Image (cartoon, rainbow, N blue to C red):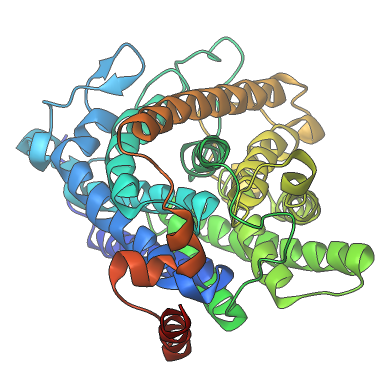
Length: 436
């Protein structure tokens, strides 16, 4: 049977890919506003550089190692589509009529944003050169294997380690993107150690409007992230879109309520953080739950992530911009709660649901899907944390991770990039030099 190009689906996927790519500059604003003014450019550069590093690797061998012929359940064959040399017989995703090159571009944006997310855990103290090398290695031996294991037919997919139970559900990247980035961020935060003054003096965001702008761009782009993961312009994409809207709004409200109860203030930083927490949590479940499931996931994520960001002070690890509290915890919340709220009532809700998977516990499916989701989440955390820690340790020994104390105190922007974001910071540095 010969399949034809579906121009509607193709146009939607090109648009969705562009929306997801916009998320990385959005993340640069979000993270950039959260750091101090003397390192904002460095923080934004870490996000922008992820586009160059991960984008190049993806088109050379990343797509092939993710979706090529399975090797041991861990990676695909890098020679199958090296340089995106896709055979004519495979040039079209037959089921949806979308060219494979368009699908490859969409997946490239996922690899890019995942790398960029990690940078928030090590803000204000990491060498830019070491970050670039880390990004290239991490994409190759952590992100790509994880994506293959979940989406490319590997160990965490339909025929993987949970096949005797049910099919794991990760519609748009709860494990591949958020648990993966969160666990990696924790590993690097532990390796690099605390920023100077952490826990002893306030380290506040320097530009909250940047943070709000970044959150807005992330929310906008995330509709491509989640709805685009259907790879078609249909009712399932519409369900993912609606769930992304609802869960995110509820998470924002839940975060603000938690802040108000705990601290007496509902803050703009809390609103922006709640938005991201909701987006993270609904990502794996975007088209696998109904409206009520999306509301519940958003509410739980908003509360738990708001509480989780304070754990770094209790346990003493310096996750600068709360990658662990938002992405690791939010990713775990969304992935595990699928086991409670998943529904295969496709006729009523227009929901995509993996063949053979069961309803969640609250929809008559028992504990099977819940156990499947927990197993996959635990494996993802362990794999990402351990391999990332080993990569980080090797780079710590060979290249070094930390900038000098003088650079950290004086500002990474000026010392490393030869620029400052604000003239007042430059003037302050000149005055210090004259007095010295």
